[in-house]
Length: 285
Image (cartoon, rainbow, N blue to C red):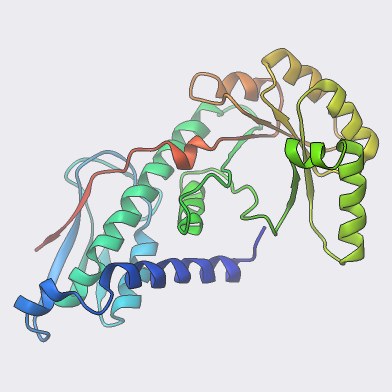
């Protein structure tokens, strides 16, 4: 996984690019009718229910736009919220609040939706050893914030990108003329380039699970689109030789059944690509 320093850098890049995209040469609506000396105050109002996420990110956004803005936080990231709750107040120059408004709302609405869905999934796993993971199926340019939201919701992050972990999927294995060849070439490549990266390999059958185990040196086997019986057999076959992960056809109805098969992790792209934004508003006080 990437370091916390790298993660923070990614978040700052998201903010800088989003502000560039939204404001450009100037917020002419505000510039036209609000004096640059005018001071204001606004509240973040919840019009939905779920798990709030993005409060700390909002603080980063406000600070980026205008370090003189101040927040009074009443509800922190990861807390349950309901209609009518006020998450925070922000005060400062009115123009600054308006510049940051849309990015704060867009970010918090999506992050809260992701955190809410992640918590729902993780609660379905209570009583098992299994943890829910996100994937790289994220919104382009917004990955760090979405993965942060998964953590706020109680899940764990998979690899951040293509560079912080090796994941040999079906196409890699096919293009490399087989799983054994793909694993062998990967281990040699990592050694040659002095890279200390974990290796995950996707298996499509019990036969491929056996091939992966025979090759050795693998951190985790991803059981792709296995049914419950195949998953149980794979978990038994793998034992303590490496970690196990289920993926494919995972939803609210199936996730517990896969966890009960004994896998260590369940990854779901739905955490980030199939959510409905939480309804939030930033209103003047």
